[in-house]
Image (cartoon, rainbow over all chains, first blue to last red):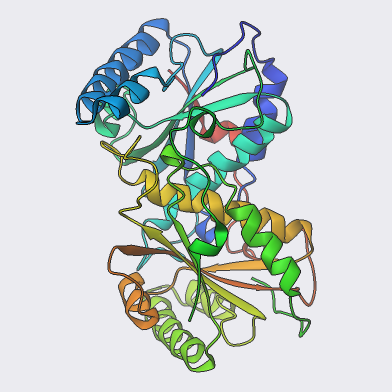
Length: 190
Length: 190
């Protein structure tokens, strides 16, 4: 994730991203995504403090010092400074869709939310807006903090804004955390 | 899902779709996607028979006759006639990524595979290729049928081909199974 510039996201642009996301394909057309826009500064700070704590714990789990230092040097969330923060939840019991395609794979509802998030992500990048997906958190704790229905599962916490220094190369590649692998090594036949 | 035309997908086009998919963002850049291209007719038939059986079971679960008939009228897989069938798995213990971002949300690996699938899907649509994501199946049974490592989770079984009758309106909407909902009903603030 890049550091964010101070420039805000115009309401019409944010709206366009959400409208694009809501056009994503979903299992049974169940549209199980629920978008929560963070507007309360105290809630943002509570989320940031939670992620900071989980982050410290995750760093401590790297036994090898070089890797631990590399981890600590990464920018892993922008919850305090991002112009926009969105939490994306999956409604595990949506009224829409009539249960199509989820009898044996209920996880399809969560996967459908990911297609919406990725649609939003691509729409953001097309507008020069950067997005960081924060997953160093306890989903249940975030659900409680945001006081959403108990049937909702947290899929993603997203920080959005214009990057200070745009780059075509993802940060984890640029900083040597993890290089791209070859497709040939990931492709099989049966 | 539409019915497929007989036209095959050119190898260079299939390759381009897979190359695009492999550029998707992933947690820790772990790239946990594993693509399996189905080439064995007997395996395709075994998959189709499995999905037919799960499909019959799912149809029987609709107590209301109108809904049951509507379900039965849907085209829910093209495993026998699709020019290409891909199974996408998630490696739950990838060597890449060094565990970043999955300590508290291991499901991020599976979500990363969904971003790859959706990237492939959009790349396919941009070329006029249709894609059907089949989820009326037992993921464990498919994993066994395809004889992949036990650490792999089935995320999707995909049928790809050129649609006989292209349409901008998804089949489930066109056939009245489930209409689009309003974004306003899915957007919340905190």
